[in-house]
Image (cartoon, rainbow, N blue to C red; front, side, top):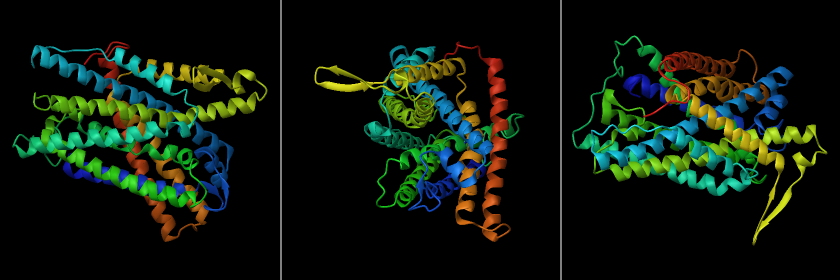
Length: 417
């Protein structure tokens, strides 16, 4: 919001979130083919694309984009978590040594710690085993959002709000347009939930129909998300103005609020621990499914080895253990090497937003409902798709520009805040 300003920021946020919400409700109808209630199930985004749109090239390209996007989101989540953990560390340092103390800490230990936790949790075999973690993540997401909004409103009410403008931060700067584009990518990144919609829908019972339940859940969840996005962005920008920090919570450093800020950062960490697993499970699932089909007689890949510790019993699959551990290690190493927070999120959002969140769901809806070419509805859907394409291209250019500048300023594996 601080980069885009009041008008462009509000319009961009509403457009991105509402377009993603609309496309997600259409996508829920494509879980079965050809009929959304009685048709054959599509267990993944890739299978739905193959069923509705056909074509080997599009099917494979979509698969690579979906799973690469989900994998790289894990890198963004890892960086975000490390920043929150460093913020807690810096808060304690300032309270102990004074507000002017040069408290600089490396992200690397926190990235490694987060990576170890995720490697352990990734051994849970599927979505059904993650329900408790998903609920905990949802609760903590409300927690840190309310804290951020509350602290922002307190700052505004007490008359300590920042200077805001219609055009956003430093409109005369040569980098202004690039930062605006990257900011749009940040918003698009926050709308990527449709990538795991089929994996979640696959856990629902067939009665009542999955598509109706999922559309209701997406509509309620999406609208709540939009409300919180608007509240956080507007209250945060009003509180700090043109000096809005990259991490909103980092701006609340006074002694009266430090415990609330630390609590909010803890909530962020817990939330992302759960979100990371939800978004990585489809990647784990497709690799293990393909490996099982390729080597059906391999004991290393398919055998479940029972393990018992006292009264606790569980199974260990050696392929799942080794591959998911390797995945976690790679994500951790990439997060350490490339700690570019906002620009990385913007690039991820730009890459996935138009093709995966908007274009393909709209095309599958057109194919399912047999919407005729050159009809008013056909034109409307393609106009929405075209506008989202322009936004994605702009966001990608801004993110790439930011990453290029970041590569010139940082050294690999050497990063402190």
